[in-house]
Image (cartoon, rainbow, N blue to C red; front, side, top):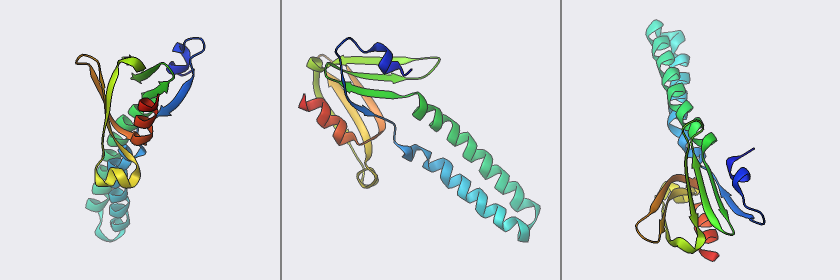
Length: 149
C-alpha cells in the first residue's frame, strides 16, 4: 500500500498524483552507452577498451541506483484538501500542506524541461514555509491542480 493511500482522511479524494521525471536516469544512460561503445571497440583495441567499458558500466550502475531509489520512494499527491509529499523508505521525510495555506506555486523549467515536460516546483505556504520539488513530471499540471482549487 502506498503511503498516500494509507493517510487519506475519510471523504478525501486525490485530484492529481505526480512523480519524479524519468530524465533523472539520463546520466546513467549516457555512461551505459559509453560502456557499450567501449565494449564494441574492445575487439579491436584490446584489454584497455574492455577495462574502460567495465568502468563505464560500473559508473552507470552507481548513477542508476540512487535515481531509481529516489523515483521509487517519492510520492506527491494533490487532494481536495491538501498537498502531500513523501520521500524515502526507511528514513522518511513527509510534508503536508493544507490547500488554504498555499500562497503560491512557482514552476522553473529549462528549455530541455519544457521540451520533455519536467521541471522544479516550489510551493510556498503562509508564513515562511516552502517546499522545493526537483525534476517533477508535468509541473504545470501540478500547479494548475493546486491553484484551481
